[in-house]
Length: 162
Image 1 (cartoon, one colour):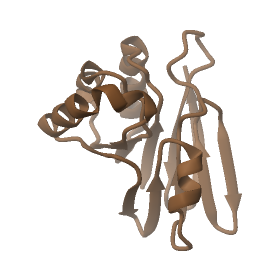
Image 2 (cartoon, rainbow, N blue to C red):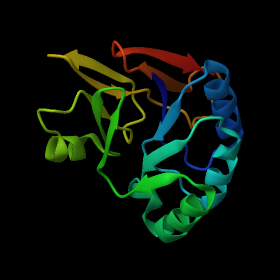
Image 3 (cartoon, one colour):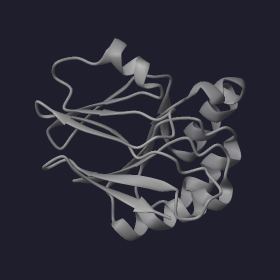
Image 4 (tube, helix red, strand yellow):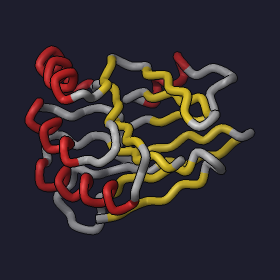
């Protein structure tokens, strides 16, 4: 199972439209958003995904979190205050926004830890556990934005740059 990873979209609707296209072209089974959506209209832009959307709220979502929660529910998306624990394809996945939250919530059974917040690429595979952040995706510099695809069968990753 291949899943899409995105975070820190910060209401960049033009980039979100491209992100949706890339995930749909990649044929991911599900998409995880690591937070900092910023406004409910950004969630609306994700309705064109052909895969279900799951995620957590980030520090820049605090002021809009109630409205984001309501809109996510209306759209059939699953968003929570971190942490989000998922069990997909035989893998236990921890999703947080800030990597410091991962230190608090990670447990020995987690195979995959996904975070955002830093806008920096991170790929660590240690003792069978993947820690991953695809990095920046809300920037305005073409070619420097990236989202990620994680294959849960072997924990391989791929960056999709745009």
